[in-house]
Image (tube, rainbow, N blue to C red; front, top):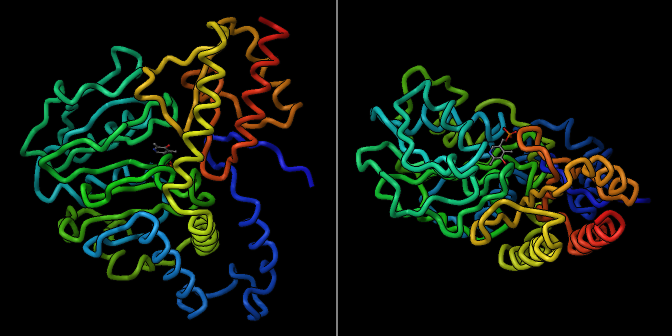
Length: 360
Ligand SMILES: *Cc1c(COP(=O)(O)O)cnc(C)c1O
C-alpha cells in the first residue's frame, strides 16, 4: 500500500491506524453482524461510542464540568449562524475580530441576526497579523466576542486567547486539539472534525451551560444548543459514522500522548517548513509576521509565480498531495494537521530545497 503525504486543508489526512481500525470492524462491529453505519443511534452500542468520544474530548481539552460537549452537523459554517441565534440572548450586537477569510465569513453570516461590530481588523495589511490588543475597540455591552483562533487560508494564528469581559466565542475549526486551549476562558468553542480530529460530518461545540436557553425564538429546534444538550446531541439522527471515526481519532490522540505531545510535534513540523521558506533567500515567501505564523497551515508563494504549476506537478509526482493554495489567495499551502507526521513535513521541506536548487 502506498500512502501519499497529504497536506490537504480539509477534509485532511487521518491517522493510518484509525483507518485500519475502522476497516477491521467495517462489516461486523463488535460481533453485532452489522456495520456501525447500520446500527441505531439509540442502541447501546452506539451510545457507548458517543459517551467514549465525549469522555476522550473532555480529557484531552480538560473541559470543566459546567460545559456541554455537543457533536453536531452542518460544519463550522453553520456555527457562523447558530452562534448568534443562540448566544445573542436579547442583545443587539456582537464584537468580532477580523483576521482573515474565515472570520470575514463569520461576520457576514452574523449580520443577518445582529449588529456586528468589528472590534479590530488586519485587512488593511493583508491579514498578516493579529491586531495588537491595545487597538481593539471592545464593547462591554456586546453579547460576545468572536475570534478565529487559526485563519486556515491566511495562515495567521493567535498566540494566546483574547482577554474579554463578555463571553468569548472561538472558531477553532482548524486548530482544536492541535495545541492547548484554556476552555474555561471561553463561552463557546466550535470546530468541524475534518481538520484535526476526524472526517467531515461532525462539528464539535463546547459551550458553557450558563449560555444555553437564550436562543432567538425563530431558531429551529434542530439548531438550538439547549435542545441538543438535553438530547445528548441526538435531537435527530446524528452523523453516526463520522462521530464514530472522530471517536477513534480522539482515542488515537490520547494514545499518542495527548495535546501537549501533539502540539510539540505540530510545532516541529511547522518549524521545518518555515525554516525552508526563510532560508530560501526570497525564492519562497510567507507574508505573515513570524509571531503570528500558524502551526496548522503554512501558506507560501514562489517569488516567480509562473513556477507554481510546475512546483505542484512535481510535488504530486513525489507523492506530496494537496498543496494548492486556496482559490482566494493562490500560491501554495501546506496544512500540517495532527495526522500529518514529521516525515511528511521533512519530505516537503526537502522537496522545496531541491526544487529551489533546480529552478532558483
Ligand atoms: C474549514 C473552516 C471553516 C469551515 O468549515 P466547514 O466545516 O467547511 O463549514 C470555518 N472556519 C475555519 C477557521 C475553518 O478552517
